[in-house]
Length: 194
Image (cartoon, rainbow, N blue to C red; front, side, top):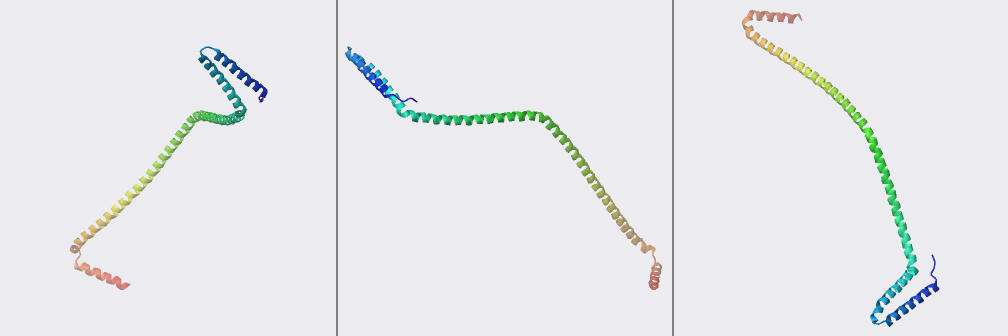
């Protein structure tokens, strides 16, 4: 950057002072001495503005430029970060779009495969149910046969008991004392032979 030329500033300052003197002399010479005040106020504002610009340029230029450069760097970093995030999000959107298209293609295949698996599982369940029903029926048949066998045995025992009871009721009338004596002799003869 260019540095201020001291003689040039000195010239500007002298010129400003002369301008103030010239304008204020015209204001003082005029009738109604109150008209010089607005011109004086405007002149002083311009002089103050020039002084302020000079001071800012001379003393605040470097810190202000450093601050602006620092802010520029921070803003550039923030923009780069936002740009990277934007690119990442756009990539994710692309991937989601591709996945959506793939899912549209794969959905009928997946649906058909699930239906096929469901049908297979249904057949397996039917076969398992049939096998279990056969086992249950076989078990029930065995139980029934066992209960029939027990009922027959119980019937035979009851019939035998009834026959024995009937025989005991009838035998005393049929068997005589003579029959008893012959049996005892026969039993003793068998016992002696041994």
